[in-house]
Length: 402
Image (cartoon, rainbow, N blue to C red; front, side, top):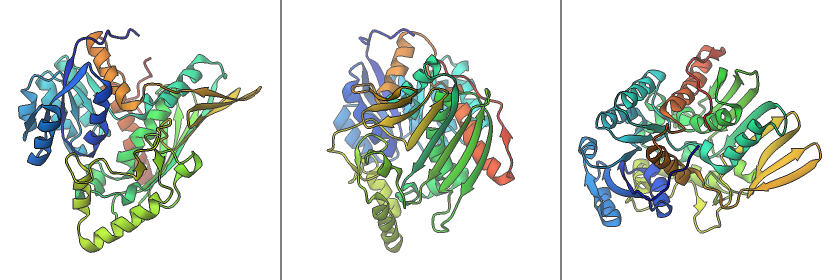
């Protein structure tokens, strides 16, 4: 795949300046070929800070953002608005990166994909862990065949998700809240990318264990790929055990993670319930909030290692693969060795560069809207399988394109 000469500067807009934007905007320090020039948000104070920091135009309405001269828009509005906002942007000929989960169901995803095709623009599923360097390298090794045929893949993650401050809609599964909608797309992207993309079937169970936190907080899913390879995705967000304890206290972004994250999260939400200020706590974490960027008790001043989204283990005929702080560990027939990934381009920067290159090279973007729809199909299947207590078969899957 050709890589664009990154001399032309593309203009980027943001639909929504919430917590997700605080994770993406810092990436532009490393993206001189992409300039943030516009944003839409319902909070005037966020737009004021945006104009001061980026010199860009702020809008209180996304429809006005649509009429601006941006080339690409990152959509990070609440999950239940993704479909309408993506279609609106596509109708205005904007290329789009949409935060996970892509939408609430396959029908919404299909409408988004159709709108992008109808208007000749690119639709990319964003915030995907398949673009993290360790996951990309795992997929490369599996597809190379150097360890023989793929046997199975597992990703397990235990965090404090349930006890992070939430807006009301984030605790409603039907609006895209809860552990399955918020976290399964990450795990499924990892598993699908390594396994080739084509999930045949899903059997899932969902945990909802605390009445005061009404959305689902845990799930287990067993999947089979079209070639028969099995995979599991396990997630528990109830803030007791933390899998970061098993991978050198590195968290999702590669930063050091406080070993008492879960305890602190539970105490903070317990106090917020007493004070009635949980929404204020979440608002403070958004762009221009008093605690902007604070989310999961990372040590922002610590050296960054490779990003971990739980523990991923890949088993092939001739060896196993897992992450190390700085790359991958390979357990082969002749012993164990490490592959360094120091300096590799990571998630958000990689994401933006993929969209840039696809525009400049005039090629399809990956992960595409179709990929996001396939991941969302498997995500929803976990919930539906749990309700029906049976295996569900998928029909909207698509293969990895590299």
